Length: 267
Image (cartoon, rainbow, N blue to C red):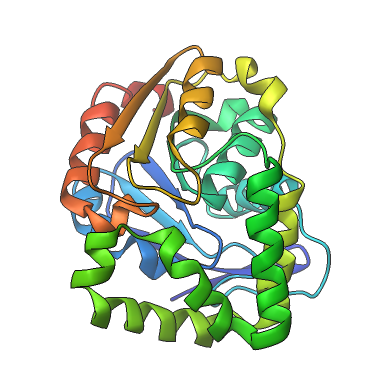
């Protein structure tokens, strides 16, 4: 996996395929492997950019205050360095928050926007959950934080039927996410609020949410849909917070169908 130097930080990334550019932005403690089930289907038509945000995976993890605006600036710098002028952007959870900041700050660099199980602001409930994750990380490290997050991330059926896969994802997450990085990433989430600016989003937007998402339930996606004028809301049945992993074939089909007439926006 290549790394690239951007000013004061190096980010890990992967580029696959040829064609219009499509960027996938990770959830909070994901890395590029979190989009494994998307690479084959999307790289047949797109030049797919996956990358680890600062604090994630194999990217640098400076012990400092992060912000979603900083992550958006990092993506812009990464695209500049790779000479990618414009792209469709898909963001999951925390990645969807970053994508909202990116489209608002750099509207000329984005074609279509796909927001997956994410929100426009952190309310009291989400703040409580994130603070609990921070405290659990401080007490029990990345291992305890992951265990506490599992019921929020996946549907009941997925947890029941995919124990080995969840354990493998946990091992990778613990290995690549030291406590200080998780805390810095989580604190950046707490400052996320673009709720009053959503009407400024002009990019055609697809909003996807799992109907069993406990962490960021349907009402947050309904609010995004209400405030983003050119948007479409799709509810994935019997799916939790991470549709690209739980139901990759359905997820891929929904996104590809949405994007099929949007490529002229980035060419």
